[in-house]
Image (cartoon, rainbow, N blue to C red; front, side, top):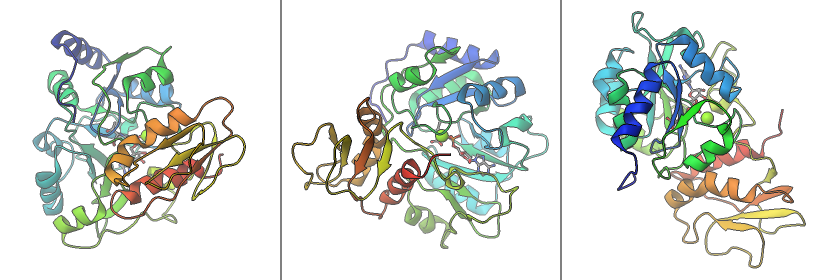
Length: 321
Ligand code: TXA
Ligand code: MG
C-alpha cells in the first residue's frame, strides 16, 4: 500500500459524486486499478462493459468498504466469515450466493445467482467507497483481454478518450488481481490465483482448495481462468526462454539473466516472487513496444505467488482468438 497518497479531498468528493451520478471512475486498489460504477445502477454498469468492450457473460466484482456491507449483498457461511475476518480488507474476492433483495443490477453478475464481493485495502479505494455510499462494480481498468493497469498512466493509455474520471493514487503495490475463491459449491474452489496464496487460504478453511473446473457446465461463470487468452500484450509471448532471438524482448527473473539484451526487464534480480508479481504488468507494458514481435519470458518458479504469476503469463502466451 502506498504510504502517501496524492489525492485531495476535493478529488474524492468529485469522484464519489461521479459514481452516484451513474458515471465511471477509475481508481487505485492494492491489486490493480479498477474501472468503477454504481453497482445498483444498471445503465452505469453497462457502460463499464461497453467501455472495456467486455463480453457480457463475464461478471464483475462488487467492491464494498467492509465485511458488514458485504453481508447485506451476499449470504455468508462460516468459511466466508473466517476468510473475511482474516484477509479483509485485502486482495481476496469471495463468490457467494446473492441475496434476493440486495439491489445489485443483474448485469453485474451477468444473470448468475452468485455475486463476487471484495473489500479493498487501498486507502483511496476505501475513501471512495465510504464517500460514494454505493457498492461499486469494478473490473480491472483495461480493455477486455489486455494487460491490467497498475498505474494511472496505464489507465489513461486505455481510456484516454473515454468519459472516465481517473483518480491517481500512485502505483498499485501488489500488481496482480485479487485471489478469487468460490464458496458456492460443496468445497471452496480457487477460481483465480493471486497474491493471497492457496496455502494461506487452506490454512484458514482447513481443507484443500479445489481448482477451476475447465470442463464446467456452460452456464458456469467465466472466471478469467476459463478465458484461455487474457492479459495479453500486443507482442506474442514465449515462455520458459533462456535466450532471445531477433525481434524478441526479454522478461527476466533471477540473477542469471542473459546480458546485453535490449529491451529487457528483470522482474526480480533477487528471485523475490512478491517483487516479480508487483512488476509483472508494468514490465509487459514496457516491453510491448513497436519493433518487438515477441516477449521471451524466463522460467519462474510455480510456488506461492509464482502460481498466480505463471497463470497470468500462460494466458498472455495462449493463442489469441
Ligand atoms: O483485484 C481485482 O480483483 C481487480 C480490482 C479492480 O478489484 N478486479 C478485477 O476484476 O480483476 P476483473 O473483472 O478484471 O476480474 C474479475 C473476475 C471476472 O473475470 C469474473 O470471471 C470473476 O471475477 N467473477 C466475477 N463474478 C463472478 C461470479 N459471480 N462467479 C464467478 N466468477 C466471477
Ligand atoms: Mg481484468
